[in-house]
Amino acid sequence: MPGLYLASTQNKLKTCGHTLSAETFPTRVIDPVYPRKLLLESDKTILGYTYHDNYSTQTFEDGRFVIFVDGLIYEKSSEVIHKELRKISESVFLDRVEARDIVTDWILNTDGEFNLVLLDKETDDILLFNDRLGRLPIYYSQTDGLLLVSRNPWDILVVTGSREFDREAISEYLLFGFVLGKRTLLKNIFHFEAASCLRAGPGSDEAAIENLFSYNFDEKISGTEKISTHADNIVELLYTACRNRVDDDFNTVVSLSAGLDSRTLAICLNNLNIDFAAATFVDYYELFRPEVEFARQIARTLGIDQIVFHLSRASGRDVLDILGIKCGTNSLGVCFVVSLFDKIKAAYGKKITMVMGDGGDRILRDTTPGRRISSLDELTEYTHKNNSMLSPGVVASITGMDERELVSRLRNRLASFEEKEMVSRYLHFIFYDRCRKWHFTGEDRNRAFARHVAPFYASPLFEYSMSLPDRFKKNFRLYREVLTRLSRTVADIPNSEWNFPITSKKLGIYSLARSLYFHLPERLKSIVQRRHHYTKKITVYPADSSTRKCLDSQLKNCPAIGEYLSVDGIRKNLEGMDKMGFDHLFTLVSLMEMVQSGSSSIEQYLESELM
Image (cartoon, rainbow, N blue to C red; front, side):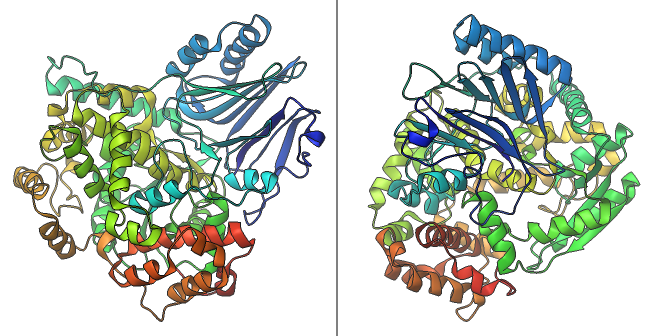
């Protein structure tokens, strides 16, 4: 994964228990080889980054300070960014001003997805902080006086030689597809939390890490204005977000489906007279084929160029690429993106900005539970039933973890949130656990190939929309108002999820049926899901497939996997797994094998269709 890497110790790096230099720190195990740039190497500190032509960084070296921006900052010129961060560096490093307030204020007044490092070359003082939602995943470890920070956990594993996994994290990963809180699958390697600040330097054996800000989803505006007023405001915020995220040095491509989110962004760019093209894809399993014709209607209506890409299954080589890029933090079931980006670049050029609709389904729609939640126990039950990859019973069978303990840990996590309202706690779980540990890592995977932007996550838009009373978003009311303001004609094109447009009177019936669905017993829900061919319910790996054979090789050839997972439990539950659940299990086992043995059974299937 491109991005920054950092090592810091109060002792000399050569005597802190690790042989560490700029040459050894960014060694990749299986990650594609990226160019790298070393910004600073001293006895106590290494700072550098890896990159590619589509990856955004900025570096300012100003006297005694090194300022490194990993990611994108919008609405501020390079000169302004330099000036503001120089001022923070002087205040924190020279005047010894408390970093908390000055950094918090800067984060809350800056739109972007970024990790920032401020470094004093004379003292080896370090300040690292990120954006308010933690949009660029970054990881850290502190062991024996050595601080390691990297965008890719493989870096930390290579330096420390650690091979241990976190047993509780494994069970959470199988249950949800991600790990709750700041832990990762790897023991003593942590996910840096959103809007946090790390301070390391003289006089401290361990870096101080502090969370500076967290959204409280209880806090809503009065909502006395009409919904039309809010829709007008959101349209303007969308225009600003789209305009800010386009760069004339890159060809702009919208990932266009027939859903609401990508068409909304396509209309915005079109209304702003910004040149762009559309890319629509049909995956090997043709799960999204029904979207293609509606997506073509959207492109024709807007008068934009569109290419429909037909994808083959991902090869073992593609699977190894994604395992290296994301170190198991992203499901290997999405490895088709490797060939997809190859095709997109061949069509539109190597320097592209991919505009994605990520976040629209959570920011403009009603994301609260589909039924009334009156207690923490009810919220816990609803959360795990509506966000699980595998059932607690299956996870317990594979990990040996008590099923009640799995549910109890989720309950404790929900109880830790500061919101009082149960629906608000659910939103906190969605944005600070599910989005940060699943959706954001998926977006981050795309950054390994292209300049990736997601306008719905623009800070002003996110803050405004999430402050609105939930009633405005019920039954897609707010989204309909926004979309019809942008283009009534495009709004009238059916949404593939429903097979009718958001302007249709059928939406009321659909919304009622959706509300009733959340009250159904689980067995009836499963029948509804199967009848509607939901992605989660499709099984595509028969026992004689290369994928199942590869999994079997992993379980046989790496005995260390059995230290954490029940091989019998895996085999017993395979036939009942849907594709999504199997993909996450295969990701976990593939990571374990690579970490524990240093090699992968996937190498036997490099040219085979695997996922």
